[in-house]
Length: 414
Ligand code: ATP
Ligand code: MG
Image (tube, rainbow, N blue to C red; front, side, top):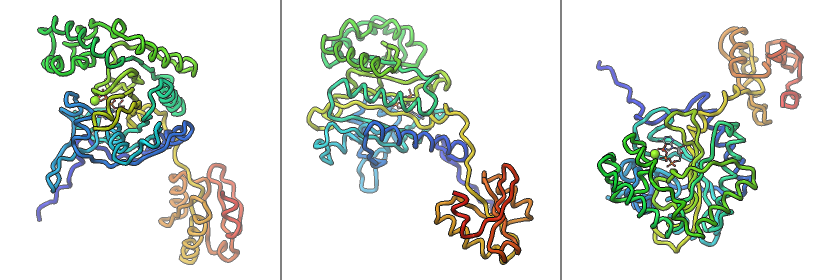
């Protein structure tokens, strides 16, 4: 008979298991705690949206839309796209679900996102983000709140020390226009030296050349004019308010005048939390203000600001997670004890005790299994114990043993 081939895991996807899973869960649990401290709500969104949700709000000229989206016609012929990020879907929901009534809306979400990229360490095709947004707040205080929240998240994960907040402003619409003209003049003068990708960007979205990773572009991008000379007084005041807020909250930051976000709708604040511990995948958390986004989806002008972080990249920075522990493992010896143990395990679990059962092999193997499961106690039940209605409770770390009546076990173990 022909051997049946096992299907492969799809390139760029992950099966997150063991220590990796514990790190992953720790990031999500910490995010959940911090979002509560900052009084953000939570929403869970569809994994796919109409393609135009992303195409219109992220912008056709970005890498995400032009190269990285998983788009497909569904059976009805509609073009759908697996979400490559959360902000566009949240803005769509804000409009279609009438969430304007909650503005300013402080909201978080998390889950899988999808981008067709070249997989490598810290870069996947299905990865996971945590995401925080404030919709309907034009004040720099909203930017500050999100940045302080991101900083606290990194602190609570214990990774803040190796991570730097890089901050920039992209100004208001007037500033952006003037800066754009300055950039075009500069890049036009160096047309011959730019990469092919950047020549396309020069026509469509010249700001993005600043963001290029191509070594041919770097010297030209680095020599481009900063936004500072183009800032309107309003845009300057906004940026000053954000940096003053960060200073007041004790959040360290550095200016990176080359920092532009890939997405077209960004205004004013743009930021990235970066580390040199992850090689080329050094950005762990990134975001900014996107005052033009909701309008691009047909809504009334609505300011917004937010960030997203890669769960895998945060998880990679964490210390070795503590091995999992459970309260006890029941070790029944003999058929009668095994029968009683089934009921006992159910009772203990209902009483809130984390307990497993070891029912294979000799006593020694069963105790080894209890150890491997990270149990604090083994509950040994043989014929003598059964007759007396007790378990021998062995504390695995010390080897101490004592007898505890079945009825008193839950209390003794919790
Ligand atoms: P990069 O420059 O690394 O491609 P990006 O600018 O495309 O990042 P964002 O769109 O800002 O990333 O997404 C926010 C965060 O999501 C990133 O800072 C990063 O931590 C994470 N991220 C982005 N793409 C991937 C990916 N393919 N795999 C794993 N994490 C990712
Ligand atoms: Mg990217």
